[in-house]
Image (spheres, helix red, strand yellow):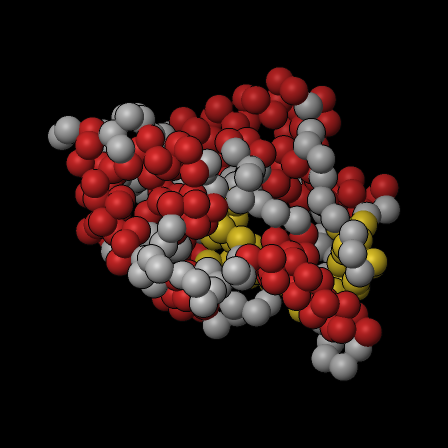
Length: 281
């Protein structure tokens, strides 16, 4: 199919998405009924310039990851998602590829947690989506590109996170991530993107190579699941951090909460307000 058809369909679907349904604040001066280009780009984790070129047919070879990110941000149905893949020149992912699809039922669950920091990863620990409260708590994620979106890379090679760990806690956390990635590799041996990720991590991180080659099982999870977040504006916040597994779709959903009525709950609420108020015109 002609490359312009991909961009035309993205633009059509962008125009039909009500901003409030995807967590985009609506200011009083807003004219567009659907999503603005920069809003969709932010939700999909790509640059507004690249989205412009895609919509105008000047960028003609979006990766499967970009297609999936756009499909998720646009809340496409399964049929529409498959069409978007075909228009981009890709086959829709099969069972031998790590899924990154957030189904409508899971999306409804996330919508009900719109005021709670939530992040979703696929089975490679690559970011699928993060809501506005999560970005307010942990830092902006919409500018992350490629391997920057992978939590294994961020912990072993990247800038890390705002989570405060002791040396042992950090080592155990890294070991758990690598052990889980090893299990993912055994379930999806035909996934080329996963193989490239593992190869790049092994080439650049001696720590990853050591953990990967050891074949050791993951350390036991901390039963308390308490996390200390060092927020630049409100200081340290102690939160409960629960990771939920969506078995059928192989997704990891991590939710951050504080006990009601505590100082930590107040700090969390303030961090979310400070981080999200700039998004409203």
